[in-house]
Image (cartoon, rainbow, N blue to C red; front, side, top):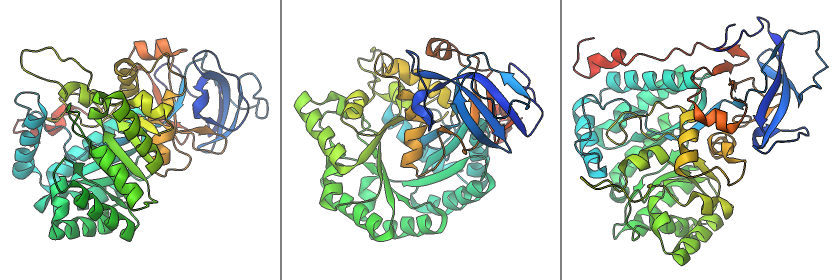
Length: 443
């Protein structure tokens, strides 16, 4: 099997030697790390699984097997994207954001959804997105599905079909997406809960806005989640208004209901604009309530603080360092891809981690940030053995030539190789021309 930079032994059992792996992503064993938090390791692979994981130079149990020396190149487990929008992906050519703002994105998506989101349209764009993510090295994705009116009966069955089709390649989860005010409508909630029960993965959620009935809406959602055994996933305070504090309301609701399920809150942008004492109070409640937080740095950098003719003054991201320091599980993820909320992106978590490192200044602040696209989101999604390197675990790997984080982040790692069950996959990306017929273009 030919990799981007070498040839993998053509055998079901072989060794990968002399690699660098983030210590924070290794389960089991005793390893020493360098100043980058990277440990030198050897892997023995047999029948699609990691048979042994040992310090480099000590892999002797199967020394008769073919081997490849990776020359200190960084190896990662396949990564976990816990916040995406596969139903919106790649509609930009037919429905661009007219001004790059959040309201512009909302209107453009609403119009496109009403006009174009048939089962065929959603299925085709979802499959395109999943092929892209797979080629980049993604093992699992949680997507949000717009769940309003007729779309509930279109996107959820398509999603269930795609989850089945992609089983064994990418593990999929889905959470419904609608505005807080819709939670107050019993008929809407009944339709959403029925769709989740029939087609979903035990997740409920919405976009929270600071409406007068916010606490009542949250009570409805928390009661529904408790009664049905659902976890919760919210879009929260995606704006630059310090008065937007629905994150605190969610934490209060979780404590009020003594909720025992998992809660993931995305965006939380306004948290970074709070006065220090308010930020500390809210983060304390988030920690107490057991809430995890995912930042979406690419999308939020694109949308937040955008005003025509004015240079943006802030980066749009949440207080991720402060949340992590308080013991809150934190992550970064892709969010939108080539739709009105973000004109770019490719569901590439290597890109997300690289840009998050720059936008959020993750360097010089500990060496365990790779967990934010691997171990931590896998735990929130309840995926055992995913996002880590462990003896007995799947040989699902991202192999690179970069020997340090400065090499890794300096380039896009376009020559990376992806192993799934110990076999190198074809990393050819789908061509955008495949979608032309959905965009009103001739192929």
